[in-house]
Image 1 (cartoon, rainbow, N blue to C red):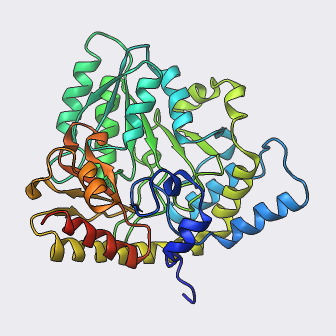
Image 2: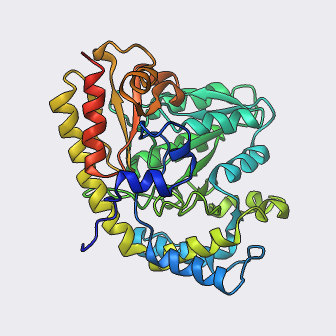
Image 3: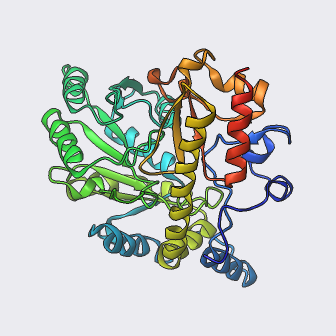
Amino acid sequence: MATHLLDVPLDALRRDRTSIKWRRYPADVLPLWIAEMDTRPCPAVVDAVTAAMTRGDTGYAGDEGYAAALAELAEAEWAWSTDPAAMVRVTDVLTGVAHLLRLLTDVHGPVVVSPPVYNAFYDVIASIDRRVVEAPLTADARLDLDLLDATFAEVTAGGGRAAYLLSNPHNPTGTVHSAAELEGLAAVAERHGVRVLSDEIHAPLVFAPHRFTPYLTVPGSERGITVTSASKAWNLAGLKAALVVPGEDARVDVARLHPFVTFGASHFGVIAQTAAYRHGREWVRDLVVELDANRTLLDELVRKHLSGASLLVPDSTYLAWLDLRPLGLGDHPAATLLERGRVAVSEGTMFGSAGAGHVRVNFATSPDVLREAVARIAGCLG
């Protein structure tokens, strides 16, 4: 690549970026917390949004080929055949999840998650008055199918409705669930009548030799529902849009979503993400190469400078799960790292009961920032 995507100078990021990542903390803090990348933008997206703005195309979102673009990408990248006509547009992944959970579960009813898992899962479940039930990952960060089987049996024993919220790939561990694991999940979910909602927002960010498996491609997943977006892989969180993709036997459920729900997607979000899916595939491949190098660098830095700490090197995403328990920083190390080292990372306890003593690190930044961040963390240990 002639130009690296993740080499944006730190002073330029602090000067030019006005998102929450760069405004929550003072300028002396290195922000490696929220899932936003320090990357140069995808030219295809820039061109599409600029052209729309120039021509005054600033109204409400239409179809714009958004669903068809996702279907084309899914077929090309993952051999996943989907029907664009069955997809429903929503504001973002979590908004789609919230509306679906309202349809598929009861007030105060159970929604199962597998911690450590995306912290916003807890927030969205609480926001609609549902109850979180944890079925943690195994010690090696895999789905625990036996535990899920037992948990699903327990939460449905009284005859109530239940759902399982899947992170695929898994945030914050970077686990790429295998086809066999997902097929096992589908089997135990069907056995107990539990509906699976799969958040697949990180799907394009998988490192070789691992391969992403869409949940709806495995046998038994027909009643499952996927919610996804280009926002994470192409760094488009400010351009709101997402798609709900129903399994073959979930189309009736998705069709029950009120039409008002589909009006929340931004017109610019639809335009941007359509361009990303159709014309930004080479850009995201280049990005994955740089992220792959960064995850290796971060692992080397941790091994060299943070003796005793343990990094779970992710197989996907740009988020890494760092175990700091041996370093004597307590159950909430992120607060100490912020105060002493001026490094902002995500507190592990936000990701569920398995997170004490851990932090989540966003490594989608320049190698220089990663080196400085680890040096600062090491400086907290003296």
